[in-house]
Length: 96
Image (cartoon, helix red, strand yellow):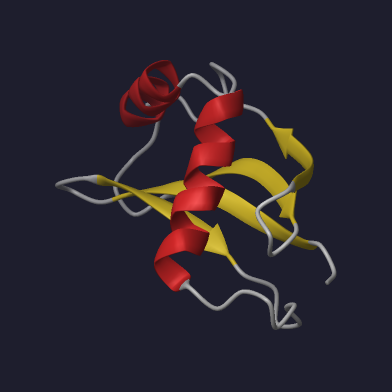
């Protein structure tokens, strides 16, 4: 098994904030359950960042159609968090 690094972010639409995961083109074949994978990545992000304040800041500072990067998480297919580089958006990243 080999760890894979995924970019994570929040995409804004007119109606909602969508959690997005950027999957590399070369990925370990151990990732077999897409729902478990999405949950693992989201849980890893929200274990590191305060979900409520991060989403609130994004909703206030960015426009629909934008995708705000939160950083990366590196995971083994067995669920082990190998590394992460996550930061909420800065107040002046994209003021309205």
